[in-house]
Length: 439
Ligand code: XLS
Ligand code: CA
Ligand code: CA
Image 1 (tube, rainbow, N blue to C red):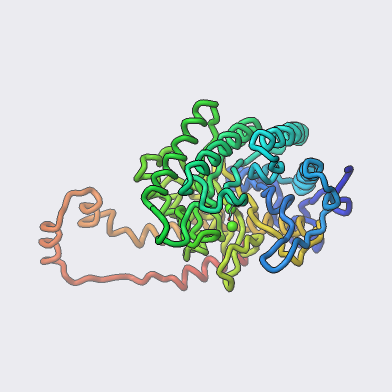
Image 2 (image 1 turned 90 degrees about the horizontal axis):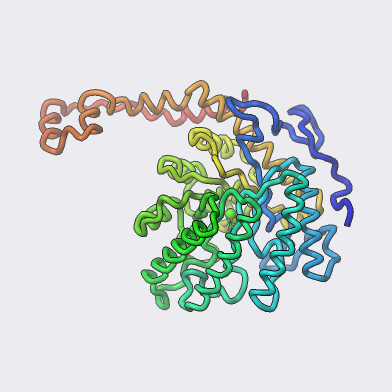
């Protein structure tokens, strides 16, 4: 099809004084921040589904997206054109990773065998493009939620034939993720949840989900797939209650079934807020439990109660996210995947660039502010001081397990006048603001 995004040049870093909307103001891939370049810290990724497959459909209306490949009728020709578009887009944007669901890249056929043949053809094309451009696969996944067969769930469906179908689909998705050198494999429990307990055996459904994960682990080992397995928590939508509600719920599920050593988490900002948490809360909880694996970088609308998957532009949030990521020693095999879509009214191809540029600049800026906060130990020293009572005296004895209730009662009998100090929340918030404005 030739060049598809004709009016868009390669996006360059022009610095904060630039007024060119098709340029980075903060994201300078080669700029070194601490011990790594920005590109190494941020490991940006494009989400195939929103950017190349999504058409802008909503519950009230049809697709609005104007795309250079829209006129193609044949599903395989369309799939091939999207591959061309994807690699041109990522090269122009300077993003080194992408992520996909099996069904984003190739259409379903009449049978699973035909579907797999479609996939193989497109995977071969993608592999060529990856070799040509050096662009890599951050993670692959399987779409176990769109087709009507998954109406009651996939691994948690009451219908064992659906469980089997989902297993066959993940088997293939693992094979193609390996074939493309994918660094991770994601499980997002699309319809793994329930609408009403009146018809649901939750115990069996959760046991089956654990069985499914174990089968995936076994098969990955069999074929030599060494990428990191990630679970992506989400509390609701599409089901009323999703089993992978949030980081805490997933952790307790993994520990119950002895699966914790095989999984880390893919934390999505919009899913965190849907669960009633901040993005930082979910990143922090994952980090302190050693399971912060990757990030779906987006944001929700605080006035809407659903998963709006907007491009992340809130610097306050990206700063605190990067703070957690830096404290995690980076994302290792993970990255910042823009699981974000342009608004339905932003339907021109160039809007895809504006969305990603906005997100990349917001995270680049957040990275620099977070790095400065950590370098100057502003928050860390305050927090360390706040917990200092556990580094000496009775606090040290508590931490070291030297005392129980009896010894503590004895201690209090002699020391019952308690002095607390202020939490200084407003002072700290004002310091963070000052860093955001000045860095
Ligand atoms: C949907 C999820 C999904 C996962 C991958 O809400 O964010 O897109 O990231 O299946
Ligand atoms: Ca996601
Ligand atoms: Ca989402």
